Length: 455
Image (cartoon, rainbow, N blue to C red; front, side, top):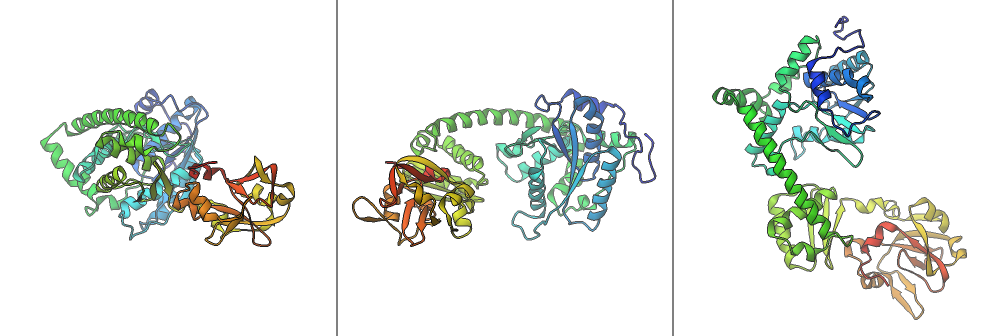
């Protein structure tokens, strides 16, 4: 292919080649024509080659091809790399987004892990259905060895899957995972592709760099087929992990068959399966991955105590009345009346429509004139009381009687009128002086799961 002075092809056509044929022949059935694929483009040889290959296949496969470059700001040449990626994508007629991230140098994760976390956050925030990453066979071997050196579990030793979910709507795809790096370098040379050499990849202070540049070359001299042996082990481990995941999914479906995590059903499992269910519950709810000792400790507590609380990297679990609730850090801030310290006074119907509440028909609910009156919605406090058919009762007492878990009780929404009287407790009941037969109940549907004693 002809090259312009800046090193990029002036010809938009990318010739067929063995690497493109390989990617084409192993094309996933889930990536149909019209799929939007965004390539993670660092500017290194791996991602430069991947974008080139997918550009060769985009017409045949009918894909919409894009790219994303994450600007970490960790290298003095970071701006140059972003410019390189812009020019390369322009030459291939591929839209590029460049995202700047702030990598915290003092993160407990370490710079490498923090940078990775930021990259995947950027990938997840994109609008593509598939994020294509250029990890290759050498990366896979290194990932396995690092996991082994760090005492990794089956999940860690299984290294990187070819495809996995990135979030609820997008997948990660690694089409070069069984291709050695040397083949990518050959492809780049044959197609006269320029790419970036990151000098930080030579820094032995990073364990992966030491492994790649010093340890693995020596081991390969001693064990010529080391890579193929490791890849074979990874494939075996991935098969075992797939089987384990099937068992975990079956157990989880049984535990949650009533619509919640049933602690008594969880107790019926063996010790190891209990541990896996706690890990799965944490992962499913986005609470992060806890340490093995933490899982062991909480499993022991949960098997014995009626109530328990477990702090996780991104949230907490609460055991209460036979159910295990999982809540992300800051979950309460998704509640509009908590986020702003209470919803400002307005017509009640307007508040409901604008703040994710609904009005459900109820045998004894709010009258229409109340819905047109000025009210606020805020979290219940210790002094709130509501008038019943006989007498008045403290709102917190009512929440206790309905078996609302303590962590949810403190944020329970109440409707307060302009005279500071409690008009209704959302999802539960209304003040006898404000209600009528076949009226309306103010409902925040996410909170229905917390009512363990409905009337």
